[in-house]
Image 1 (cartoon, protein in one colour):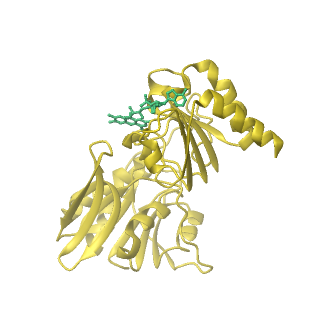
Image 2 (image 1 turned 30 degrees about the vertical axis):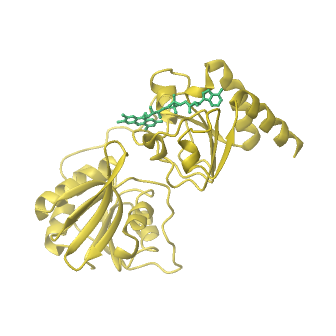
Image 3 (image 1 turned 120 degrees about the vertical axis):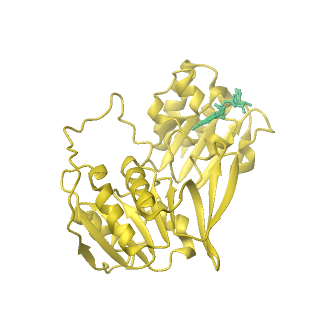
Length: 303
Ligand SMILES: Cc1cc2nc3c(=O)[nH]c(=O)nc-3n(C[C@H](O)[C@H](O)[C@H](O)COP(=O)(O)OP(=O)(O)OC[C@H]3O[C@@H](n4cnc5c(N)ncnc54)[C@H](O)[C@@H]3O)c2cc1C
């Protein structure tokens, strides 16, 4: 058991946690709350696995048990992801260990006199660096960052634990939640610059040509209702890591950019040459999207 722990109750967490830990991780122990195949999969990226077989019981039921394990081992760093289960467990572990709990963390470093973390604040507008000489619990955003996978699996040690009395009654998709945006390799996203809902037709045509999912900025979903809310990207929306993110008429506010930090190639189309998005984008096209999008469709049709 090492003095850096990651707490995992789903597949999207271990990659994000190890990514934020970087070199600060060293040998990492994973505390997995979930099925055996998750424990074994996580074991291909860490030094050892402590495994609570959650069965059909929700993660929250194991928070007290996880807190007991944390308090007994007293690791210097405990990292979890901002999923409902991750929040519940880290909160309980931090309380039992009398450790500070820091959220929105994007990078972690070790120093001679403690652990330092960079975390986003003010809705992603600033990065704040905090340091503590004590053990610390850190929450990172869940993401599709792949976990490193070795061929061999680290030892998985089952942990016997008692769950709290919480039962899962049913699981069903939320209304309209059919979007594959979080797993898509390509995303074409629209902002207020689209001008009207009618213009979505050509964007859908472009998305089909690229085999892409449609995304959007927050106001397009929340204020204008042109695109379902589960498709908006950003700090308070989806955090996505596609290979291609094509932004059409999105200004590039920090709260939007916060959702695409892990995108591989970012292309922005904006009529304003000074749009902030051009500072982040790998490629920029200054132009009216109503002219650029049909041109892109035509070019893709020809290939
Ligand atoms: C706490 C908090 C959380 C937030 N969370 C999120 C979040 O998760 N996601 C998010 O997206 N936002 C979020 N926001 C809102 C964010 O700050 C911005 O207001 C929002 O992203 C702007 O949306 P937009 O880029 O679509 O619109 P605008 O800022 O209005 O930008 C429209 C862009 O379109 C361009 N344009 C106009 N016409 C055309 C044309 N014909 N062709 C090409 N370009 C054109 C304009 O030049 C402009 O750059 C949050 C804000 C707060 C305070």
